[in-house]
Image 1 (cartoon, rainbow, N blue to C red):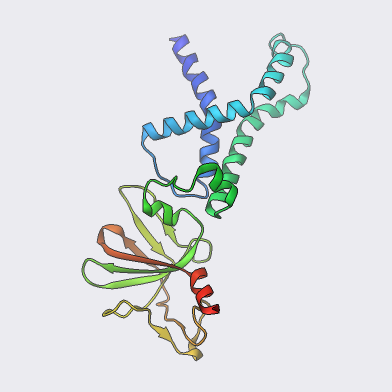
Image 2: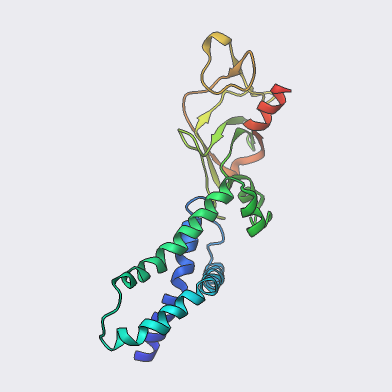
Length: 231
């Protein structure tokens, strides 16, 4: 029983850097691939990569200070930072990579690849972006709004396979026949312009959209809209 407990503790200690890196990464990206098998593979791969990267520092500390530590001799006080670094370094690495992925940094795309998301939903909403969403529901109604997961009120896209829903922070009035965005006159503007003479008519509230009720969804980046207006 003692050997089994020790094996479990050692395994947990080995996988701990991967868990910290994964937690830091998911602070900025959608949460998907949460099955036990996916998590074990992810933690094993991340931990192996981190152990490989830190093998020489770990070997140096072990070779020079493990025997004095176990025999009760005095060791440098700076070594007290080793357990903290064991957790914080992977956490900082995962946090940095996750933030870079959310911001579409080129080096992060080269590192992780451009097709890492398992579904189109994840590919669209895992990044930090702002754009107009229009949805035609299965009932025939049109709904939509401004999706912005960086501003306030912040929008949010769920990443769980069994609960795909979308919260749009600023809902819009849409024409129920064509689905077109209804614009306000110039003397009643708010802060989200997409044209030179008119701006969208916001309802003043947010919008929760459940994917099982959606027949059609369109997403238009506000950056793309601004570029087309400038041209």
